[in-house]
Structures are given as C-alpha cells and as structure tokens.
Length: 287
Image (cartoon, rainbow, N blue to C red; front, side, top):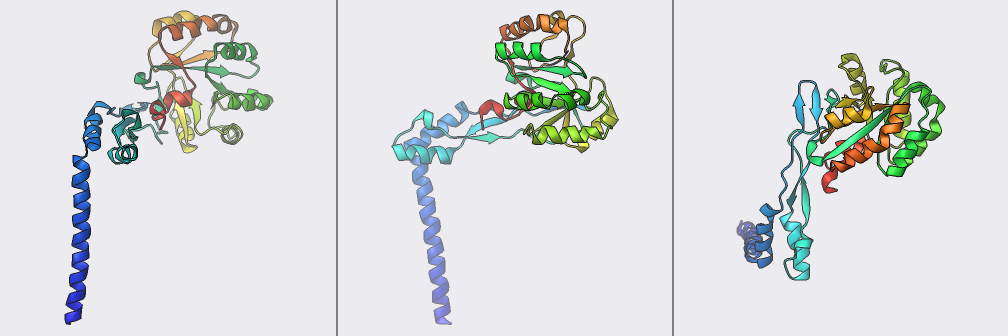
C-alpha cells in the first residue's frame, strides 16, 4: 500500500511540475517584447469577416476576414530574435453566414466590398464567339460563358480552350430547360473536362423547378444583376455597381460596344473577373 501511495505521489509531482513549467513558459512568453508587439498588432491588422446576405430566395456572398495568429507569428519572429511586421502570420476568420452549399438560393451579385464585376456571355445554338473572344484576350480580362446544349455539342474544343484560360463555364442546358436529362451530362463534362470546381446554372426570372434541379446537382444558380437588352453600353453606364453580374447576348451590337464597355468598367475602378473568383469568399486574402 505504501508503494502505491508513493507511486501516486510521484505521478502527482510530475503533473504539477509539467503544469508549473508550462505556466512559467506562458508567463515568460507574455512578457517577451516580441509577444507584446504582436498583441499590439492584432487589433491594427484585424479585418472582420462579412456575412453573406440572404433575402428570401436570393444571396450575395460574404467575405472571409483575417486575424493575426499570435502563436505562429511569435514562433516565426522568435527564430530571428526580433519583432518584424512582415513576419506576421494570419489565419482565416469565417463569416457566420456563407455562400457555401447554399444551392437553393439565386446569386444576384458579388460582394460589393470586393470591387469586382463579372461579364457573362450567353452562348446560344449557332453563335460565333470568335470576335468576342478576341476582344477579351486583347483587353486581358477574365469572363464567363454560359453555354446552350446545342452549341456545347458542336464546340468541345472551345470548352477545353476556355478552361485553360481560366474562364468560367456556365450551363444553360437546352434552352434553359434544366429538367432536360442532358443538363446532368453537360454538368459532368464541365466539371471533369473543364476541371471546374464549381458549376453554375442561369435564370433571369424565378423558376423554382429549375432551381431545385440545379441544387440537386450542386450547381449554384445565377440571376444576373443586369441583363443587357438593346443598348449594352447605355444600360451598363446607367446601372453599373460594385458586385454587378452582367449578362450579355452574342450579337453585333455587343461586339461593337464591348471594347468601350470594358474600358468604362475599368475606368470606374472595378476589376473584371470570372464568376468563380468574383464569388469566392476567401480569394481576397489569398488563403
């Protein structure tokens, strides 16, 4: 029995010693000038996350925030022996409400804080996209193409080309009929051949059946901020806002005015991005 109590005593002493040592290390660390400076930097370098905005059946993505990782920053600076702001290490701060997996909502805009705009081109049946593509490449912007099934069947080479250029490819199914079984086939091709992480459907007006079908296949549904009709440049000038998702048809008017449209958007200080980068909630901080 005596040995048993001696054994218990030794274990208790070891635990106490470990606890005391850890406590001492923490006290020393907190008093270290490096840690003191890191703690000062925490509030100065904190960026709050922004929640996604949900209103009825619509959603606008949020944005991740960033906070200083005190422990990793301390370990990094301790190795060089001094506080250095450029060695601060950051970690993500997730929004409380995120876009992730909210497939049953229409995405109507990107987050305005990102100061981005997306141009999506609606490619139907026999549309010739060569002139549009040439302008995009000349202006060095990233856009999105939403493709009808008939056009999709006859232009597989373009799909591969666009994927390699980091354009986002959206799915219009056949005449925007998402109950058509070929929608799933198109979705599979876009994801596998295009190596696209996220898939998108498209609706200009609420369509619950289409929304449900797209959600079932884990596609986000875009309901654009602006659908250009007869006067592309004028309509964009009058309605442009940060976060806008602008849908354009393929026609001669759009082709003629597109260079000016692009320069106008850039002149307002907006970056023209593909849908994936525009809607991605963590892209701003590069995590």
